[in-house]
Length: 279
Ligand SMILES: O=C(O)CCC(=O)C(=O)O
Image 1: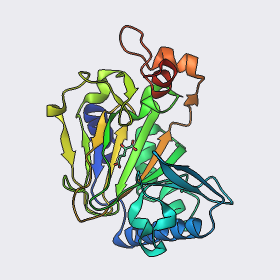
Image 2: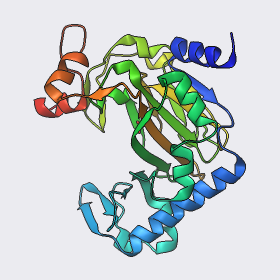
Image 3: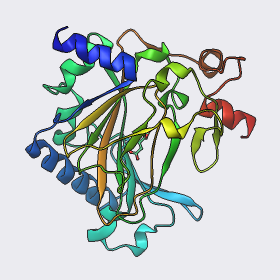
C-alpha cells in the first residue's frame, strides 16, 4: 500500500486519521497571532453585537461575515482588551480574515493532498470555525456528529479538519472520538447543553482521547461521533477547524436531508429536525 492508500484505509477503518505535524512551528505561531489580531480588530470596531443575558455575546466584523463568540456570561464591555482573547469560545468564518489562515485553509502543501486523497479533486471548504477553550472556563462540547449540523449529501463526502495550536491534552479539552463510530449511521440529536446526541445512542467507554502536539491535526468523517471535555486546566487550548466536502457533493433542502440523515426507523436525526420538534 502506498502512503495515500494507507491514509485512506486508516480513515475508512477508524473514521479518522491523525497527522502529527501538519503545520510547521512558524505556521502555528502565525495562526496564534492571527487569532489575536482578528479578535482585537473586531472588538475595537464591531459592526454588530448580539447576545447577552443567558445567550453568549458575539461581536461581528463590520466588513465581512467574520464574528467571534465569548464564553457564556462574559461581557466584552467589562473585559480589558488585552485579556479579551482569553475569554473567546469560537471564531466563525475566519478563513479569509488573515493570510495566515488562508494559507492553511486554501491550498496548504500538506493538507491539500491529504484532503484530495480522502475527498477526490478540488475539495470545497464550506465552514471555518476556530475553537478556543480558554484556561479554567473553556466549556465542554458534548457528543455529536458534525453531519447533524449540515445538509450535505452524500454523508460520507464531508471531512472535518481539527488543528491543534497548543498541545491538546485530556486536561485542556482535546478531541475524543469513537473509533469506527462513523459506521453507526445517523444518531438522533437534541438540544440540551448544546445540540448533542441523545442519551443511550453510544457507549462513551469506547471513546479514545486524541492528544495532539501544536500543529498536529485530526481529520475525521462528518459521521464520526466526537466530543471535547471542558478545560479546567491553566493552559489554553486553541484549535482551527475547517470542514470540506467533495467537489461532487451538494447541499440539499432540510426536508430531503431529514430522509437521509435519519435513524434506522426513519426518524430525522439532525439538529434542525430537533429544533423543529422543539427538543
Ligand atoms: O474543539 C472543540 O472543542 C469542539 C470541536 C467540535 O467538535 C465541533 O465544533 O464540532
